[in-house]
Image (tube, rainbow, N blue to C red):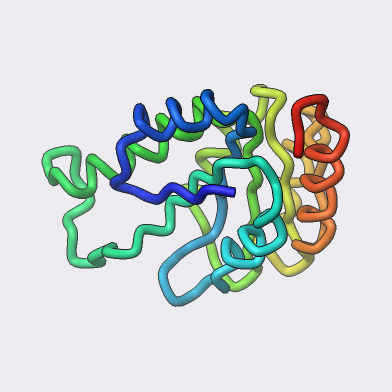
Length: 165
């Protein structure tokens, strides 16, 4: 398992993933620094023995004072990194933490709902669970009510994949 975070060069990461036959997984979902649990750590730990590359957008040096503008170099770099990684991922895991609003995750769900590579976890209590459930139903996206079930599903997929280790 190799975890990649922004601002790591995606081209270099892709070369490594390709050379080692890694499945590329994007960890989409709630972050909202401080509001969401750091669920990405749980996913990472559960996949530590798998031949995967995790694209984790939870940036270690995030600065909440960055102006959210296309003109802000750091912010633009972050969003561009996320968009590119989402497009290149083989699997998109998406977790909606009930303690958050997660507007960007909702946007990403809409963008990638028809991609065929999403697996979602939207527990009871998420403020827009009904919307998420309907989108998942419409586009045949597997949607779980617990993070443990989401992790179990990705482990199952990796186990059944012909090139998995």
